Amino acid sequence: MGFKFFKKRTIWLPTWPVILVSILIIVTSILFILFSSHNFLAVTNKVPNAKILVVESWMTDNSMEQVAEIFNAEDNNYESLWLIGPRLERGYYISEKYKTYSQMGAATLTALGVPQEKIHLAPASKPLRHRTFSAAVNLKNELKQSGLSSEPFDLVTLNVHARRSWITVKKVFEKKDQIGIIALPPVAYDAEKWMQSSAGVKSTIFESIACLYELLTDSGR
Image 1: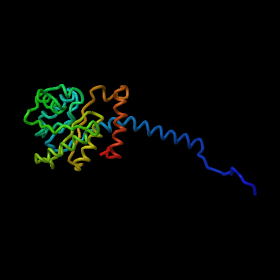
Image 2: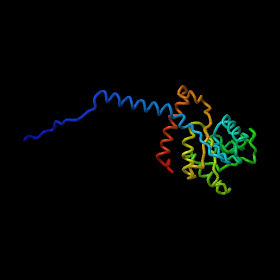
Image 3: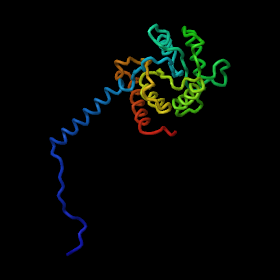
């Protein structure tokens, strides 16, 4: 029997109808995920009777106006507002009055009618990466020192960033049922027509990937 380089084998392959149906299922699934991802990311799920409102302070004035409306609404139970966030990314060394987004946010909210005595600032996070995690750790320490570590709270952030921030903060506090989330409407585009805006598409795709990364990993922590 001579030496052979190749051997004939029989393999089973799907038929063309099966291949077409499989492609259709995959494409349909991708489109469904794509079209529903924005609403999934921009989640709002408040905790009943939460008395603390936690706000990511890097948001714009338009968003802060909505924060003030939420806190000052007659039908809410909030007794205090806590600002979290990093120090200024630009202008830190030349700004004499404000060194952090939380300081700037506090001044803005006070000007918008939120009582100054109800506004509290968690220490600013310094890292350029994993800022939400660092801010959540600082907030947890501050609430513990204030005797509020067991109190439920609602977290306010911007639009599609909400799901990822919610996941991160719940990891830090380890009390999933006591942390709510409020997603504010986007500033740069219409949420109902997000696929017609480059800003909407970019932010949704980016946050989808980042959210999946946060779910599967500890973000380098």
